[in-house]
Image 1 (tube, rainbow, N blue to C red):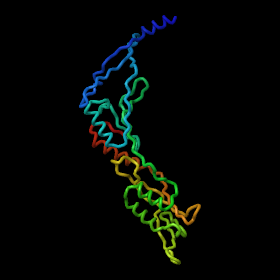
Image 2 (image 1 turned 180 degrees about the vertical axis):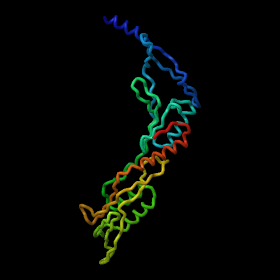
Image 3 (image 1 turned 45 degrees about the vertical axis):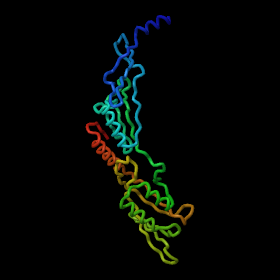
Image 4 (image 1 turned 60 degrees about the vertical axis):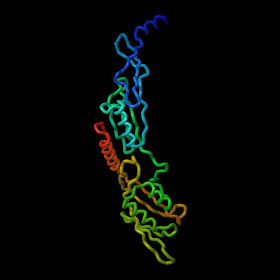
Length: 261
């Protein structure tokens, strides 16, 4: 019974070794001939690849790196070809390059390159109150230079720990009455909404401003400490603006490539 089963399987398929001319990679590094192995089903006449070739995706972190790699692929007539690949801007910090065509077996596309923007080790803590010195350092570090950034830093620099008396909020700004001497008081007006441009995408892209809610309060455990925080307002328009910048940059560097966002 086992012998008959093996003979039947042997009639169904046999190994076939073929060479694919389109898979010749040539360039300054020389020439590489790729050989692929297939099994032929003698009943259907269909070939099934044995251990099919799979491109190992490259992991990059800059748009310049992506542009350089694709230009090299063109020069050497590599696996990633302009006419059969798509550059997809998946998000403001995420780009993928994959094949245009589906794998007929499982309808998957082959991923060639993944590009993700590098993140700062310690990102800004939105929604969390920080003491005024840590907040000032974070604003100076994680946001691009802008008029509103200068206004915010100047405003909070005039408020010192221990001198806050009362805060008034009219919906547009916050007024902090602070002791400036033994008996004299001074009022510092702080913005409630502020437009800032965080560093959050690729280094080749200009940071895009987003509106944030700024809050200031006395410390919960120690009212002599002043705490500040920034809160997101829910706007996502900045994502679209960054994606458009990325597409423009790539279109200028990679003429003729299919780029979608």
